[in-house]
Length: 155
Image (cartoon, rainbow, N blue to C red; front, side):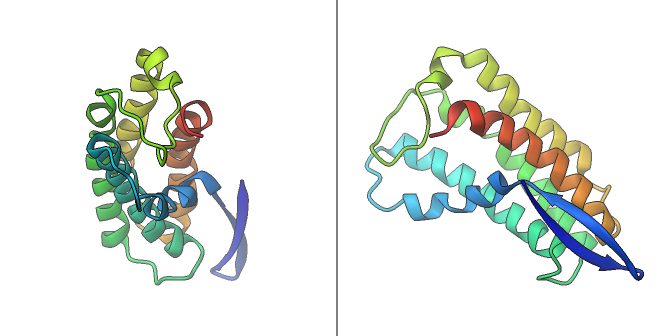
């Protein structure tokens, strides 16, 4: 976990951001050379989530101007893409570039529950970000769901 410090209204505040979220964006680098179409589709879902997390993360770190509409739009897109996690893993597919562990299919119900938690959490956060200070708690909640799944089911 990385802690970013931001200044807001003269007060130093800590914004917690789970590094696993940034790692989602690294999936784009792994796409080159993927031969299995099912694996590529899964990677695209994860990349789409990662791209939206980067938008929110940049605002939280002060690297981008805060924009409540854009942050809530990103949460909406994360929820929509998260709904695609389960279907994109239904077919057990492998590729040397895949970061999916076989445990996904060995403990399918747990995997589905964790994937669903990401969607549910993102949906619950839509509309709750109205100030930059709201980004840290939102990222913490959403990042926790990503980390819970990635720690068990991702290389």
